[in-house]
Image (cartoon, rainbow, N blue to C red; front, side):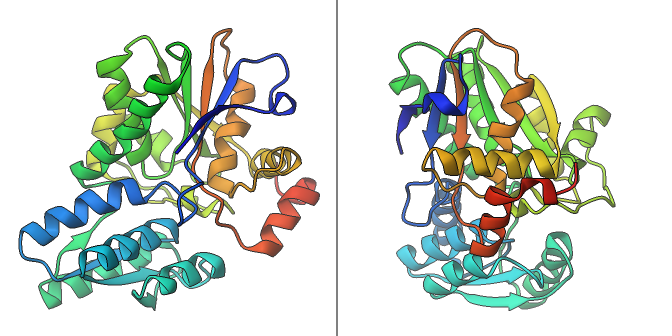
Amino acid sequence: MTLQPAPPTLAPGRRLFLKREDGHELGAFKWRGALPTLEAYQARGATTVVTASTGNHGAATAWAAKRLGLQAIVYAPSGASRAKLALIASQDAEIREEGSDFDEAKDRARAFAAAAGLPLFVDGAEPAQYAGYGAIADEILDQAPEPPAAVVVPLGNGALAGGIGLTLRRRSPKTRVIAVAAKEAPVMVLSHQAGRAVECNRMATFADGLAVRVAIPYAVDVLQRVVDEMLLVSERQIATAVGRYASAGIRAEGAAAAALAGLDQVRSDGLVVVIVTGQNIDEALYRRAADSPRTFPS
């Protein structure tokens, strides 16, 4: 996946590069963590893997399972993105829509996996994911004209920011890692502040890749060590960023747009890299965000 200078209209006056993780056949970055994780499961004798997802993680798990000859069972919350569910189905996974949100779907997946004696792939809890996402940081450092002053990452369950941060701490410790969460899904920020995993009842973001209500302890621990700053952005700011990307010819889903939205709070005169994590968003929602951002709450 490429690192490229951002169109000047995205951030006038800034030295901004985009790390395009949306160019994979699945339209998102999640394959980087899913493939090594499922390879590890297979090495331990697994033939079927269970997971829960709002979309991109499920698609990546299904894609990796198909490549490895495994069966994937994906639990998704009712009301999940139709575009993302179609992507999961295209990879021959079994989809079970259960639960009112991601964390309820994960509870259903956990119960089924335990009863059936199958491995449960919890997104954000597998060390292999972090190593896979660390490759994104390696590519940034190998392709950038100089070490970035900051890398801005969308913050969902924390695995992406954690994996990128671990590699940057090793190879470019002066590069700041800035994670951006939705104000309406702040559990990872609250956990970071508390120094431990907490639960949060507030989770009402249209950026489904950020829609986490229950923090993962492993991710919280990693983020404590590698993230320099956490930012919150509103639904309207995310939608506005979707439109800014659209004007530059880039289709970005809400989670990807959150990082760009957070850029307005980043103070840096040096080179900044924003991760474009994915492009999978239902068309009606995309058009509303791009054309009518003021219809989203501030």
